[in-house]
Length: 109
Image 1 (tube, helix red, strand yellow):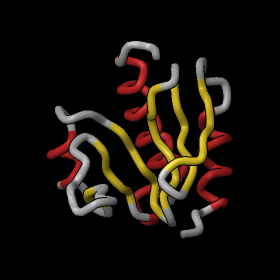
Image 2: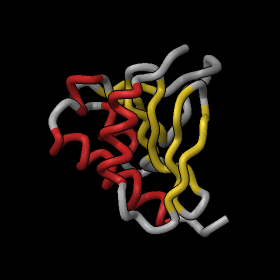
Image 3: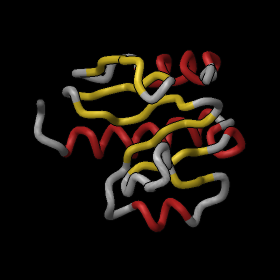
Image 4: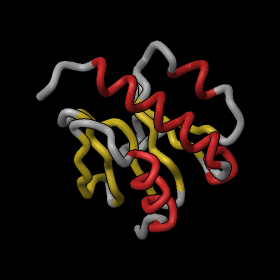
């Protein structure tokens, strides 16, 4: 599955300057890691956001957000945001900030 290079470019620009940032090919797309912990990425045309289980249910109630499920078992604490949900610069930055904050809360690997 091809992934949105346009979204990857926008995310790279928005994540520029984040300490401990790495980029890896993951899940058939691109993943951005902070201190070697997955934070966010691009999966197909969607934005992948890791936000932890505490914020998971509330995030799923937001428009253009769906469960991240690769194997038939949803990954709790991970969501996909469809294009209308990250189209604006503000929305993209908001989702990235949530995922970066969560990744930074984890022990460094």
